[in-house]
Amino acid sequence: MSTLKEILTRRPVAATIRLTVPAGAARPAPPVGPALGQYRLNLMAFCKDFNARTQKYKPDTPMAVTITAFKDSTFEFTVRSPSVTWYLKKAAGIDSGSGRPGHATAGTISLKHVYEIAKIKQGDPWCGYMPLESICKSVMGTAKSMGIEVVKDLE
Image 1: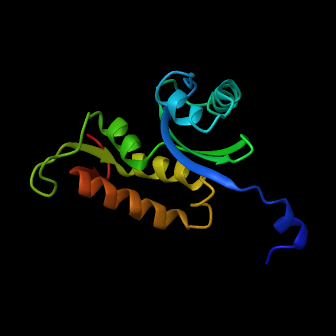
Image 2 (image 1 turned 180 degrees about the horizontal axis):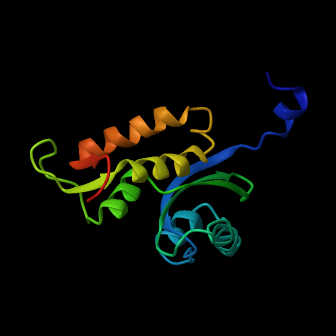
């Protein structure tokens, strides 16, 4: 339940912007510039803060960012780790999943890969409450839907 102070200090939201930006590579150029510029947000402040938060990731890692723009030209943003599909494609060494999952195999990964991906995703705030086993099952389901075979050990 909100307190009176929280209700009085809420800022009106102008927009919620969702972007995919490479880690450490936010620039005032498209797609960031036009998306934030129309709400008169400080582009350089966003770029510096985003690049600082994503410096631990390899360059060109696609990061999903959700920006909340307020009517007073201020903003807040959250950065999500890369998607499970991106990690699976990297682990299997493929560019895209199978066109016919269940019939044609696009690649193969080991259970160790699944465990490592699940450990990374467990660090996300929205997956932190889930048991590691559940996250592993979810990763395996995503792999199956992409046509990636999960084996015990890679030969």
